[in-house]
Length: 141
Image (tube, rainbow, N blue to C red; front, side, top):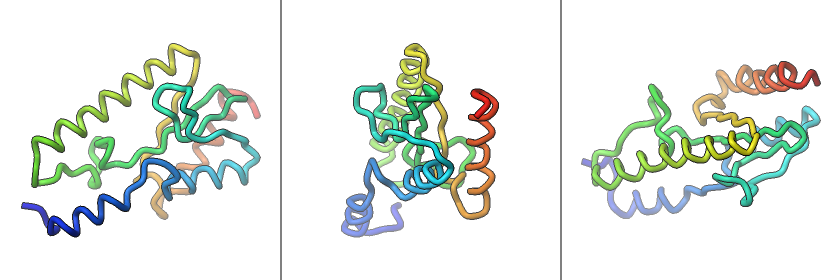
């Protein structure tokens, strides 16, 4: 049984966007403040990555824990209503993520995924600093 009425669920779902989400904006603003320049939502690349750093041949996906079923995350809970629909949809999202990562790797791109839960106020700084460590370890910048 769903916790929300059909109309409130519909309203909630209408408020969810696929790009320019708050977690994406957090990562983008932080990267820009650190001097990184990027492109966003590049349609010519598989999966239309949220953030593309051409200089570093790196793409970053900022994934919602629910929509991409983050393993062992409290936000990745299968809805109780219409389970057949949601199961198919969310499993397909995971398959598509994997396919796109493979295609990007084959094209020579490094793929990073940042999860929505990794940007909560408690662990945000640690997550974002790990990006700097990643770039320093791989490019010496």
